[in-house]
Image (cartoon, rainbow, N blue to C red; front, top):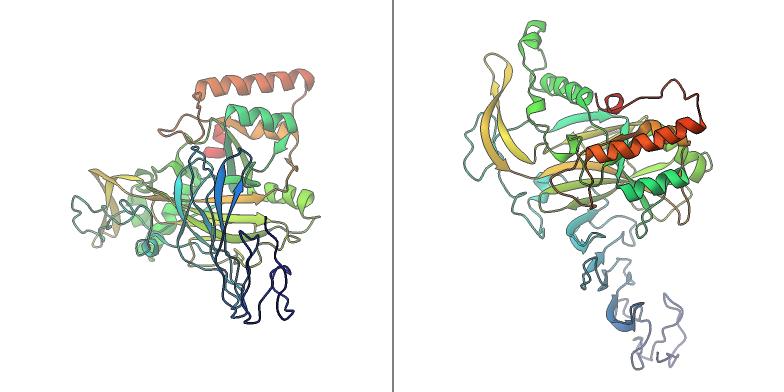
Length: 436
C-alpha cells in the first residue's frame, strides 16, 4: 500500500494520518489507505481493494462521518451466505447522537435480502410509504370495519391487538441443542454476537388480549354482552408468532423474561439492571420483525438508540419484566373477516377468505461478548426444553420433526435422571406449562 505524508500546513484529521495540501484538501498517492474529510469539512469517497481470507479480490468502500457531524454510509461488498457478493449497508447514528431513520438494505446471515430501519419500530402503515425491496404484500390495503373486501385487499381483522407476556423462548436445531446442553448455556451468534429470543404467546395471553380489545371497542360492555360474545381472536392468531411449530428448529427453550434478565445481569452486568433499547425494524417479503436490543449498562456502543420503557402508543413497550406487543398483523394468510355489529355491540367472524398479507412479531437480541456463555443450571435447561413441530418453511435446516425431537429430549432427561435420581418437584413440566 502506498504511504501518505504531510505536504502542507499541519492539521489534525479524524485518523491522524491523512495529510492536507496548501488548499486544505486531503492528498492521495496511488491507491492510498485512508481518506478522511478534507479541509472543506466534506467527505472524500474512498475505494480500496484487498485480498480476503479466500484469496479473492473484493471491493471495500468506506465513508465515516464528515466534518458536519453526519454519519455517512458504510458499505462493503463481501461474500454473502450464498457464495455471491452481497451488499451490506449500515447507517448508524450521526453526530447529533440520534438515529437516521432511512430504510436500508443488506444480506443477512442466511443469505436473504432484508430492508431495515435502525433506532425505530416503524408501524406497518408507515412502512407502506417507504422504499422497500419488496412491497407486494405489505402494500395491500386493509378493509375498514364492515367494509366489503375485494380481491387484492385484506379483509377487516383485529388491529392493533395488545399482547402482554413475561415469557420468552429460544428455538434451535439438534446441532444447537447439543451445544447448549454441553456448555449448559447459550452463546451469541458467530457473526452477530447476539442471542435471540422470541415472545411466548399462548392461549392465556390470547384470551387476555381479546378482552382488552373488546373493552377498547365497547368500553361499557355489560356482563350480559360479555357472556354473549363468542371467542373470535383465536380465528386470527394464525401467523408463525403464535404457532407451536417453528421455522428455526425443533427444540424450544422457554423461560420467564425476569429469569433471563436476572441471569444476564449477574453474569454480564455486574449485578446492574440490563438496558433494553429500540433497535431495528426489519422487513422481509411477508414478515416485519421488531427487534429489541439488551445489553450491559457498561457498554456504550448503543447509546444513540432509544431506551425501551413504558409507552402507550409504540409497537413495543417494556415494564417491570413484561413485554407489551401491539400487534398489527396477526394472521399472515387471512382466512376470516371480522364484523362489528354496533347495534348488538358484538364482534363476529365470517369465514371463507384466503388473502395473504404480512405478519409482524417482536424479538429480543441479547448482546453476548465473544467467547462468553449465558449460563443456566442444567436441570433448569431440561425443565424449560420442549419439542416443536416443523413449520412449512425451514430457516435453519434440517428440521427433524416433533417425534424425533421428543426422543432426543427423552434421552437427555433419562441420562440426567440416572445421575440425579431425585429430580425437583417441577420435573415433568411439558409444553402445557408454557403454552396453555
